[in-house]
Length: 179
Ligand SMILES: [Zn+2]
Image (cartoon, rainbow, N blue to C red; front, side, top):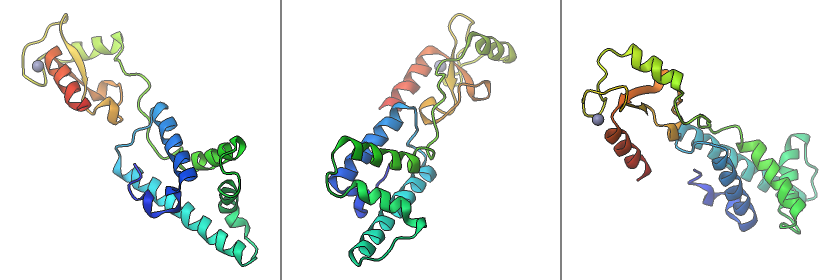
């Protein structure tokens, strides 16, 4: 997700652990990490945070004041100085990173399976009723619905994203995705 993170200060252990922890949490919440544009935006924000924190740290060394625009960087800096692993410090660092990155990624449709109503509508509105993969004739008893844009990549469980498919084509497609 963040391929250039090693060029930023967040590659250090305490920061890096927090970033990994956050990404894992976002993954569990259904976030999708396969969108290049969103990933690039996340990387841009991480770099921005890293550069800002470095600038504030240098100012602090020279005993210069920090402007209100840099409050975020100062707050973050406080979480990586001194006792970086105490629970309250970790939680504050996590909150800052989640504020920064939590809204960027698209989330998977929480519904993975098409409803009975959707199945009926799609079946009734299709007069050919052939598998989109192999072209076999389908029956009401054996057809499945395929996510045209894969669910794991953000495809919605919606009629506009559904195609009729036989069981073997659908499971083959699922297997390819998993591989
Ligand atoms: Zn088929």
